[in-house]
Amino acid sequence: AATKAFFAPDSPHTASAGGVSVSLAAAAAGGGLPAAEVAAELASLGLDGTKPADLLGAAHRVAMRLAAPRRCYGEAIYFGNLTRGAEAKELRTLLEGAFARSVWAEAAKSFADVGKGPGVGHATHAMGKQGGVLTLSILPDTHDSGVVVEDLAGYPDSYQENNAYANVLALAGFDVADSAIKGGVGHPGMVAFVRIARNDEAMRATLAAVFKRVAEIVGTEVVGMP
Image (cartoon, rainbow, N blue to C red; front, side, top):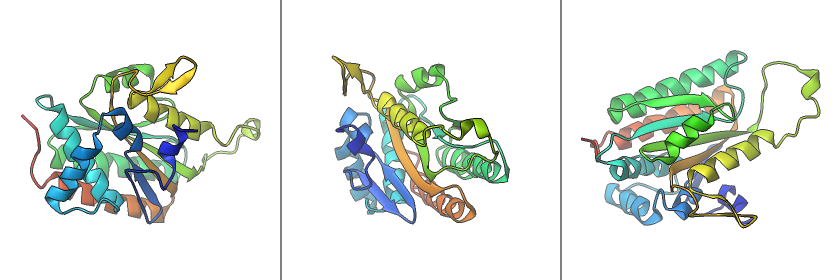
């Protein structure tokens, strides 16, 4: 219950607006994205931490600085359909363009990967736990499969949700110890939990605006880069 509170819309270090919620709660608790450093970054640039784009932009800048002298890179993992159907392909195109290209390649002068969870393998998670990467774990409230598969009719609705939570907690340094989930067990990684209402045209437009603002914030100056 305590760890699930990290993903509540009203949890600390969380900003929500327009159907998009950005939470740094797990990474703040784990130490990968220290709350004091994010708050200082928000203040130094006159950003509003109650706005998802501003909070995410500050997190990017802090992540880049903490990774130095290594070159920080980004990762977006979508816990939903990212391959089947026009809507899924539109979202992948948006993430590859507005996130990977605009935020990381152009503004941060680095790179980013876009993948689908839980298909993202253990090797990727192991790399993330070594530091130097800021991961966005993106979860929609409403899932669209893009196909009709009768055999999946009884599949738990919480499957993707639980995988997203586990991904965020693992990357933030939480693990099972003494039959309980505890922080400080693994490497304190840099991860942001991003919840969206669903993958539709309106939400993609909102996400595009969020990433455009993040790119502007990151591009204010290239922070902590060699």
